[in-house]
Image (tube, rainbow, N blue to C red):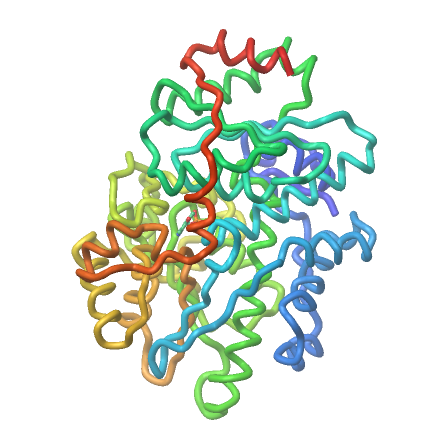
Length: 439
Ligand SMILES: *Cc1c(COP(=O)(O)O)cnc(C)c1O
């Protein structure tokens, strides 16, 4: 399978090139040249299959031409070391819980898959050690570091701003050891990002080291996110769909969105034939996409800070992929995706209400998704929202909202007990380069 750039100003590339480069040479995002539908027989019996079995079928449609089946199946099974259960919250609303992975957020799926795929390419080509550079303001660093932990042939260097990430986040990438090094930068997140960018541009460094990024726009992080849409549907079909035989044959799917990678993977799943009635993209106050749906005009703007901070994005990078899927047609996009936008007050109100009425504890991101279904479902419809992170990841915020304690899962507590190990780093490129040159 070849991959083209959304800007269409460079030749198509192989999967391997798309994964190693991340971004196309013309700065566009890679798209698979074909989206293969899965046969009706698969959908007829999907509820009898395990998550791994479903994901292997989906992975085969994406990557089957480029990776031997046995290898691909093993990559998928290694990635999915945890489940994504569907939980009933009301008669019409279900939560697809994506927070049962190592760092308790959905980004674990994409990060774990990308690490394993990159590891496979390195072994296959007999490549020397590859160095992954990642700048983080918190959550990306933990998902990438944990996803790549222990993968042979790859060393990850996480750059983060000293004193500017929460203790829980910091512990998730500074206590791991092995092939993960955390660099504690005397500066801001922007400084960290600038250092990484400068390293990718530096001729001397690139001649000496194989450098790559684990950016969320990478196809190897983005496409595997389709897996759990199929698994969510399978579980829905087994319970809600089956029992309700008479109601609508497909659920509405609602995705709390920031960079729009997660929802775009859902749009791919639908193109492959997955029964989804329509999508809702739930935004916080950073609602550039919502405004686009209303007006037909896309106007990026600087992000503002909210309590659903992983969705604080002012210019969603995957918007280019959404446009490409619908050939730039606003009408076609608006026919399949509707939007919603919530202030911090509404998010907090939703968390409080659902906790007291249903005893289901939402995190601030999932709360946007739940609320958009509550307000957006029509008569006879059922909805699934993606619960993208565990509420304990936002412990202080959520405890303040519900006025009670949030239990921290053992997995998160284990990180807290680890010993922080970092390399102190000034924010100058000279210092960072010197560090890299000694590797
Ligand atoms: C990254 C993230 C999102 C946003 O996902 P996108 O793919 O960027 O739209 C939502 N919720 C949580 C918890 C996240 O970490």
